[in-house]
Every structure is written in C-alpha cells, then in structure tokens.
Length: 216
Image (cartoon, rainbow, N blue to C red; front, side, top):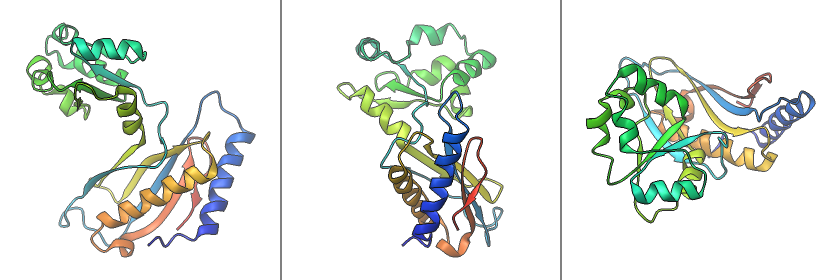
C-alpha cells in the first residue's frame, strides 16, 4: 500500500510537465525518482538489488545494440537496430580501452543465446565490469519487444550511500502513465527494504533540468 498522497503526486507530476513545456528543450527530458533512506546501515544490513518492468516505457532514448549471430543480425537489420557480430568483437583484441569505448556507445546490449558464452572469451571481463554484459535473446524472440521491455525495466541497487536515483519516465509521457510508473517503482522499492516504509526518509521526482518536487 502506497503512503504517497494521491493529490500530492498529481500536483508534482503537473509541475514537472508544465516546467518542461514552458522551457522546452531540444530533447526529451528524463523524469527521475530520488529516494532518501533512513535507519539503514550499508555496512551491516544486507544490500538489496531488484528489477521490475514498469507499465510504460521509461527510457525511450535508451539505445540498445545486439551482438548477433546470422539470424539475429538479419532480424536487427530489418528493424534498424544497431548490430555487432563476433568478428567485430574479436577486432577489439580484449583491449580494455576499446571494450570500454564500445560499452560507452550504448545504454545496453542484447546477444544471441548461441553467442552468450563466447563473448567473455572474446572480450575478456570488461563488458561485465562496465555493467554492460549482454542480455541473452533466443531465436524467434521479437527483438523490438525485447528492447521495449528493457526500456521499461528499472533496477534498484543499494550501494554505499543512502540515496537512490532512477529514471521512471520522460517529459513526453502523459500524466497518468507517469503516475502509474512512479507508484509501481516506489512500491517495489519499499518491498525490498528491511522495514518497508519505515526506511523511507523522503521521495522526490524531477525532470532533467527541472526543480525537484517532493512527494513523500
């Protein structure tokens, strides 16, 4: 059960969308959820990690590259999805700088199931260390649907600090879609916490260039 007051959230979303309309940027601004935790010891308490698909695409500008076998290479070309094959990876010669450069070019990677075990042997551990190890995709899976899923999925991971920030939407969403994404995100995060709402100090939402709006 969410403790965020419905009207407070509606007003905050309106403020964000109004601000992005008044000061229109040349690109679609992201909308981020920022959560400050309390009564949590990152040294002693278990650090949590969890992913959840949201009802609506949160990151439409997220660019995904597929490392494909012949089948997926062909499928990706039909949908204008960026591709690389195993020969492209071999050219990197396990060079840390080159692998990191490739990882920096894309938000995430998919890879054909048939190649997923080969990739570490070809590029070394560097994709994993960059947090960009590919997600496997099976033959016959719809690549566009898979990418939409990735753009809709968020991940909460507690590290050494007690504040979390995650993209939950964008300024071109309608208010109701954004509201649904925010509620689902917050409720999921609360479910990961040791004492649920008792571990939440404050919650804000903000667009890339807009002022933060407190919702809890």
